[in-house]
Image (cartoon, rainbow, N blue to C red; front, side):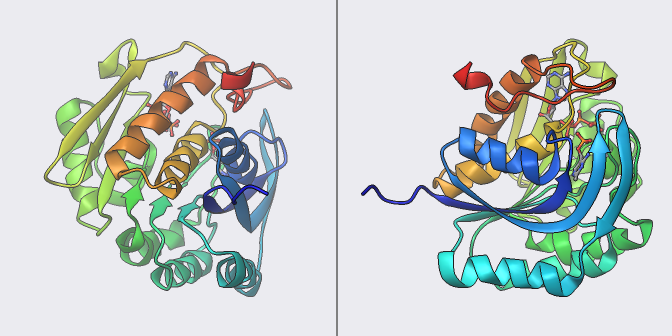
Length: 266
Ligand SMILES: Nc1ncnc2c1ncn2[C@@H]1O[C@H](COP(=O)(O)OP(=O)(O)OP(=O)(O)O)[C@@H](O)[C@H]1O
Ligand SMILES: Cc1ncc(COP(=O)(O)O)c(N)n1
């Protein structure tokens, strides 16, 4: 018998198409050698063309899943994604407050297709309840705009965005500049804790099949933290993993296909 791999929990929505959400998180965790566990917050009917419908679970069901995992099995790191409503944001923030493990908070707002995955009325709870519980918060530029009102067009703007996000209380902010025109042929992210500043640069792949990039990056960071990596090392390894997965993203259905979570094994 061998020992259990590091334990990693995702708290997120289900994507029936298998490219984002819980499905992306569990595939990422498996690819990176940790044991993935899940708390489903909402079920989406989703494919390569968009989100056809979303159904939130009751707060009681979210709490029960989380407690079932944490009370018996335990966790070394938690990742949060789609939380849907203010009630679920508050519920999950309270659960994180009672857990020692580091938390990667991906403040998912809208899908690549522009479908809302978080109610506008939940933004305040994200700012005041959830972000203060985050070890790393990973907003993309749309989420930065939603949460802080800042429009990011340059690397200096990314610094301002990081300061504004850190103002809500996460230990580290990772500002994802994946689609920033100013970066040309690079996909550049900024990681900072307000003292240390690290720019993560990778080639930008001209591949439209990028469904699930944000979920994949955040759960890869959580996998690294579960293995005991320090935040900058976990983020650097996760950036490398997501970049490979984007390069290998493949067509599926008639719209935007997923990144390839198993790219390292093909
Ligand atoms: N075409 C691409 N090629 C390489 N890396 C990318 C590409 N698009 C995004 N990334 C990277 O993928 C990771 C996840 O990015 P994510 O999709 O969440 O945010 P974004 O691309 O910055 O914003 P948005 O999804 O709002 O356009 C980040 O590290 C980002 O830099
Ligand atoms: C359940 C769920 N969670 C998150 C995303 C965001 O992923 P993307 O921005 O790649 O569409 C999604 N589409 N669905």
